[in-house]
Image 1: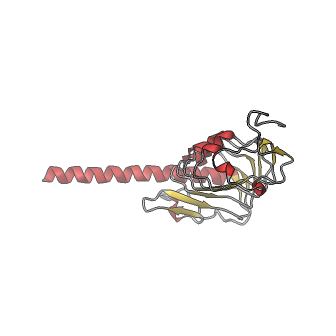
Image 2 (image 1 turned 120 degrees about the vertical axis):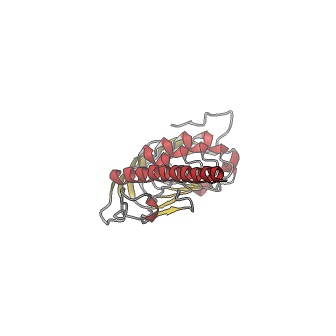
Length: 213
């Protein structure tokens, strides 16, 4: 009996250590994000890296296991760029960074966020291409990248996102043709408007999807 109690206690201890390591990793990732951002109104003031986990930080939501599941920094008057560290938030479901002045490319590491349901990066100053790695986000339902400075074509890999309900890439600098497969068959034309070199929907077999890029 004593041996069984010892084994149970050891298991509980190991699970607690694993959870602490995980939340520390997430805290480190968020702290790395903070160092990349300018925050003139101090919305990130509570992000103290010396705490055991980031679950008490403002604009961060955790589940019952202290895993970060939401990052809510929309309309927060922050600027700067995103880094690959965000890809370490393995349990993240909602990434809300809309209406700021975040620049640079969208990190391909965001494709590691397998539990992500919503990615709202609209009304920023993102540049570069839409990462093909976002096609790995099988739980994604909402992808709003509108009103940025994104270039290139719409990755055909995104047509594999069978759960995607809302897509908005309007008001960017996209080119090529609009996909017609998978969820793209249901998105309204308004999802793509004000992209000067974006044509579509694509005529499969007649022109390459990146025609005009």
